Length: 152
Image (tube, rainbow, N blue to C red; front, side):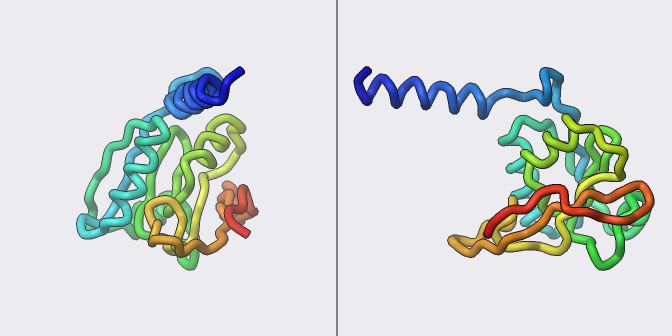
């Protein structure tokens, strides 16, 4: 097999995988993002989610605290936006692949959290600056455990 043909086959496989808008054979639910109207990184995260196949609606609000309280986000683990996908909440710059894993596994939980605004997380890309970060699973009782680790 020649290299050009092999590269085309690999590229086609990557394109098909990148365009697959489903989790375990099912359509991805829409995502509703609550954010401050002045936040630019939230728009970048929305772009990340759309590129991963999610349909996303944004809702600007000046009272994110009420939404975070409803979601059960611990105060010290908040970020700049909160989203709803299916029966789950997403706090901060959660990678789309982790959201897909959450939807596929369907754990009994409130959702996923990436506390703060970690450089290099989806929507927080800043050139080559990358910091390792954890995605936390927020249990129904408010406790958290590591769902995924990204970086070193």
